[in-house]
Image 1: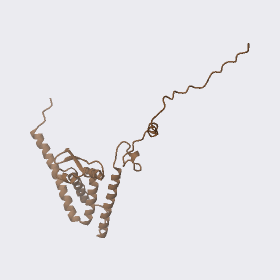
Image 2: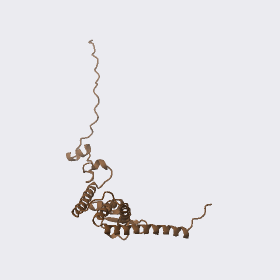
Image 3: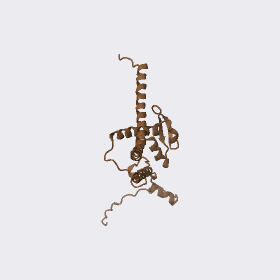
Image 4: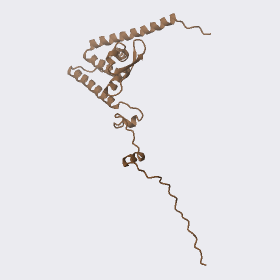
Length: 213
């Protein structure tokens, strides 16, 4: 009897079951292997936009437009001052600084929060409710160029930059008229503070707090 040769073990790995053949059209198969990525918003697709705000849609294009407009606005003032031959002062007058600061504060609150000025903001904002004495809360309308303008018109800090530049330039061109205007706005701010203080004192007098136990 001949010598038996040992059987060789099949060392090949078992292949996974490929399953039934895919009978779908070719165009529908590619979506499973490479799912489409959601496109970022238009503003986020700007250079650096998606990396800057990956989870929020920030109107960067509108902000760039606002910056360009602010630069052009101040350039126009500079040209007007140069043509009038007005020299820049070596240092600002402290009284003018105080008047300009208080006037900027009061005028920015009036234009961005005042109830009486809400018709001016209505095309760019949406009313939310009252906010303080004679003030309202609004939010900018979303989408398009009105969003950036709505943010400007509802943000007293943002509008203050424009107002401070305007009053400073006007001080060089029309000092007497500008001082009269800033003085009136400063008086209005002081009157508002007195009104709020009087209301607080009146409320405390008519509704005294109960003594502690």
